[in-house]
Image (cartoon, one colour):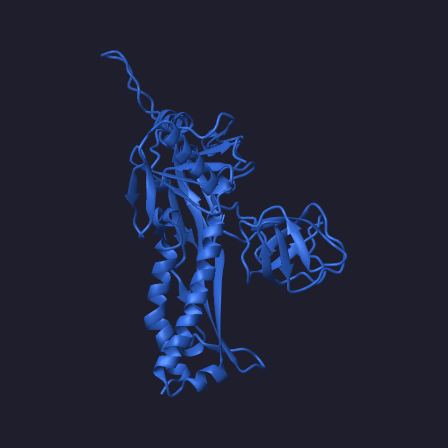
Length: 390
């Protein structure tokens, strides 16, 4: 007979390992290549000493002259606060009792909940990987007086039906009635989003959309490396190695532009690019470039079951969350996902993972991970913006 106890055992023993594996290597090809570690995690922070430059205790001299003076390695201290990633499932008491005498029905119930949690977690973790940590997913343009629950945004790339979002105004305050509003439908041609709630006033340019409660609390993704201002608590003006290769190309996607970035990384940073990721538009432009130059396409298989184009032996993939005009060229060995622990269920007294919601005949379980992404050598990474991509 199915009980709350047997449901908890299933979540702990049958589902947790599968969920963790899928969320660690199955999100996208980039995350599958990034190592995960508990090293350099101190309390709620990631504190890492990152070496840069070369040891200065080297030199040439005369046979009887003084030896070179000592000048050890240079180190900079990176600091990050661990981010908190949560995923919830909800099962009603009625559903549990209805399947109490049918193990198959209960398995189907749990499988459905796990599939939904996995799909949502993959989407959001993949989205955050290419973000800047702010949690910004769209900028609101306008709504109309006749449809106050329909907003037009600049991009729907980071939005999906079912998401729960917050809308902020230009003064950084949540718009009345649009806190924790659910996305009902998305017209991707017109970039119109239908919400479960209506705004109490007109929206306008500069209004911003975030995932519920996530503003400023997301993973320190790739765009943080290629942004401006401080990085990992240090000023870019004080440490030149914090500045990656960035260029805007006006001639179109080509092997010349890609190779120039790779050569610069090898020459300046001494790094080796081992992963290329771009938007689908940029990848299509690259394929068209190869076709025009009568060059064959080479493919390769990656860990996690992913497939990629090959650029001189370097995997080249496309991702839906990369900006339309962007290509990243990365040395993935410079990245680590520092974590307090792997994915776990939040446990209550006695190790329970299913908890009754107060005053409701509903049980919830919460999957959690405390982690953040750190690149120890930002100057070894590259970003090309192709301005000719429409």
